[in-house]
Image 1: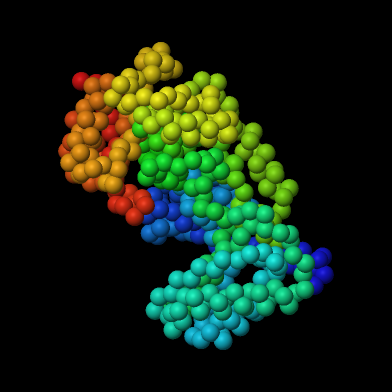
Image 2: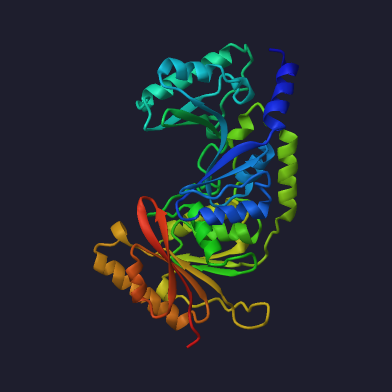
Length: 403
């Protein structure tokens, strides 16, 4: 197929049309993702009510660019490309082969195919994946197109998601590549680190906004601190990384560069800290310092190696001239990080006493493995269920009273 003819088809059928996208999120934070989409102006062509684990919207491919760049609570963003009925493998492969894959994928790109099947005659997921792969490769090879280029990184790997329910197949392309919680900043880990997407959701739920102060006194790998520093500087969530859609035939570099230029113009470098991070573990502090340096965020965060129980609030006054106030966020050790459940409860109780004594009028966000742990706190909190790493957690939000 001639390049000019293919280009026209891509513009007409992919770039120029409104398409359906699916945003995968952690269960429980779907409404926050909807709010993010609304703030970005995404979904004007159609925003569906959230379902468990995701939100779908109708929009153009450039909306997909924007969603990957800006959404802080999304795990990945899929573009729906086909929906059809198939009852046997021959029919499945033919339906896949007959699709215009040259509009969506470049020949020669490595593929990973993920399949979920429920109430379908074709229940063997490996066999379904094999049929889909053969159909895609046959469809692409029939076009005699040159490869778009070698796969240079994880973002170049094209992931195809296949869902079969009652013999109806939905095929989607992953526009994100690596999961979106990978911001491109951290090269270090921690003990039971919380994902950036969930930390962003917690900060939003706690009312954290640019201009607020944040204390992260058990920072570990620094997920909360990094996310808060990026929010404060208005740095988009995906600013430091690449995405799978950048290797699609429909990708338009000038549009992407313009989008990043607009986002970059809104970013603001901070000259004084708004995040106060600390941890008793020197290795964790060193790793966080490296991430802050790579992101140009050293001035935004005051980082120290210190025990939480030796901390006092920063003396930086707020805009009204009074003492500093803001948000304290803590993901304390629990579960396998503690020798016994009793020790975890005792530590949580001590944290509550320390906050009540030294952080009066500060907002708090505390994570715990059991909502009943709220009874260990000497101040009132609201409880919200969250899901993280296979664990059902509780998020406690409140404010330390003055007296």
